Length: 123
Image 1 (spheres, rainbow, N blue to C red):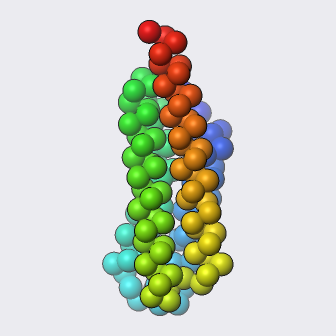
Image 2 (cartoon, helix red, strand yellow):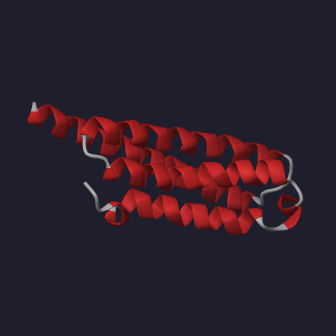
């Protein structure tokens, strides 16, 4: 615990947030502050909750924040679907966001499982 910047899932999530900021600053996104800001908040929430969870003292607290990050990933996919359907996102950008969110979610599932096992071994 405490080295969140070394976690591959945090690195991937942070990279996705940076990508999303760049993509949502272009075209019609620049004018739709509501959807743009909501997507940015969801994207920022993923690495932020991973970092917060990793810094906490107990595995139980950490797991809670990892689940919140998973929820933010699902939220971002939903918003990306909408943005794609209304023509705000290019297909390649949408596909990248969806692929990365799914990968992050899978990595978080494995991280939760590892922390759960560690928690049980301590008991």
